[in-house]
Length: 417
Image (spheres, rainbow, N blue to C red):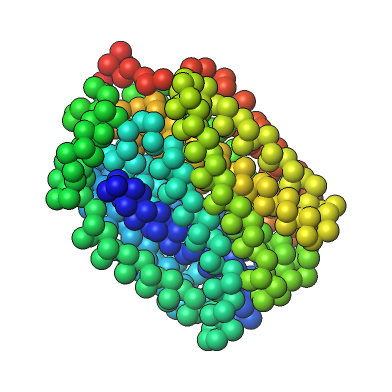
């Protein structure tokens, strides 16, 4: 069906984004031969990405609500692909930091655009499954990164890693330009598909002006989801950016060894994406309420996350297994958290709320990343950082239970404009 082709198209974009953002983490060992980088500097480079990413995630949601999904996604993909390629020209830490800022600025619009595409093309009962498929793109990109980057470095130099990954994004924009249109304008939509989409819409999805940000912030549900994302993404970005670094530093791996095994936890994260969204949709089809379907799946995702606390005490094989379980749980969780704005808010506000949620997540990544860099450069091991990271999803789930007691569409008409 056409809407699942659209989901696949967006999935590829998200895969490219995660390939792009992983380039520095995997190539860091080779880059250090040309540009000396301490752990604190490495954390600052990733924070440069996350600060820009978070701000643009916030602004990108608003941008998608203004420009529309088709034009907005097209422009941001071009921007971030050129930013990724610019890393290959860097000769200093400052130049790398500038490229990371630009990459974050572009990629910050990716998930708000993806969320809007899901809202446009999928009825409520299918949205979690669709978002799970799209979120699985994060795993595809991250799985490809270690072996692909190791191979490119072995054949040429680390600079070509960035040139080639940037080129992939530019090629995708051509596909997007010819394939994506909103349902009401798509030349190949069938009557049955249009009828299915109309079933999924609610009266609050009717066209209207954008909703003021202050209005959205008046809901405790908004703050609850943003806070939960701040906590859980702090752990996720630590895993995402620091897993190769952990294998280099704590386990003595070289680039080839990282390319051989570092993809395994990311593959598990892809399965988690599909399982989290699929489980929630299954509960809905079995007759459970939206509130039950989302929260049961969220709770099951959060409960496995503390396993990473054991990593420093495990053999490398079991450590990879523990990371894999945590990556599985994280991306199952992430799929569900990203779909919550579509459950609570009307279409005209989804991009903005998704932007707020993404901004919160990026700032969590900055805080834990900077803390990790400081501790590791001042004589601490990875153990305290893993203890913190392993606890955050459980706390985030409790925040959601407290701030979103019942998950149902909110009535915005009760608040002043």
